[in-house]
Image 1: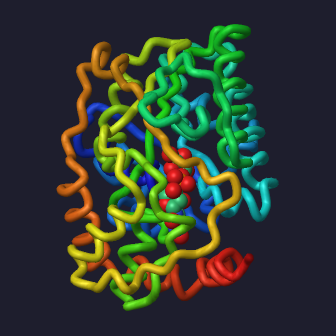
Image 2 (image 1 turned 30 degrees about the vertical axis):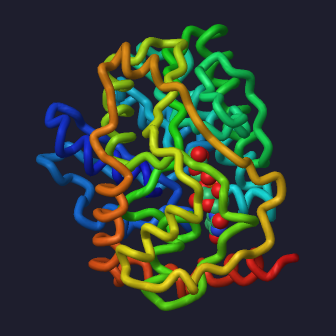
Length: 330
Ligand code: DAU
């Protein structure tokens, strides 16, 4: 139960009362059962069911789909760029082979839609003044981004070859409750709360377009309901801000000094800027984000302040080894 998937399930259970959801999850390091501790199998009058398993297990996926599933939404992914630089194998396994296995199990079925949750990283860095539209070439720069681009191409080829009703959503950086503290925003918040130094890569002027996770969840719901098979939809927030400024805003909210910020060795091939043109989703789905960055950061900081029991065990557990390996490299 990763970050975006668990937020999506909670959001869809609340806003789409006619839906029944089966959650297939392998529970890797970032797939924490505590992300959906408030929702148990059988909850919502039987509208929610959890199955422990791997999307690469075609027999298991086939068995689940046989149970009357009409829409597949693929949130399963290894998602941290830095980890993909240390070891790309799990990225290729889950993101590429896993997506292909889901597509194989879905082939020839009367599915309504197969929604692939993708990312703006497939386009690579956007030059100043350019917002990439869906037709922009794919120029991924990290093993993670390359694996997501490969998955998108497999989805599109499955649509063309077998008629699988694939719909792809490519979103900008998400943030919000339940995000694993390896990612920038929860890392800044939790380091600040612990009065620990906060690593800023390079000069900290890299730009990301921060999308509050609930806005992303609403778009995925709309893609499930009305996405056009074979189409790609960019999902943006329009909040392009340099990393340093985001960290600065968070420090103000948490009430900690900027002296906690520490400039460290940059990520190799660090994409300088991401920016998407989301005119298509606005025009076809009538979507525009409800959360400003200020609102989203405030809600996110409040959530981490209120839930130390969720993130403290992660930071003193699995995360620690990765942190020490990654941030001690030169
Ligand atoms: O753009 C969408 C993508 O956003 C998703 O597809 C990825 O799964 C997700 O990990 C995220 O990728 P980023 O590399 O942009 O996110 P991350 O939170 O790792 O970093 C955000 C920015 O902050 C990026 O410019 C790198 C910088 N950064 C990150 C970390 C972890 C730092 O300066 N220091 C850090 O310690």
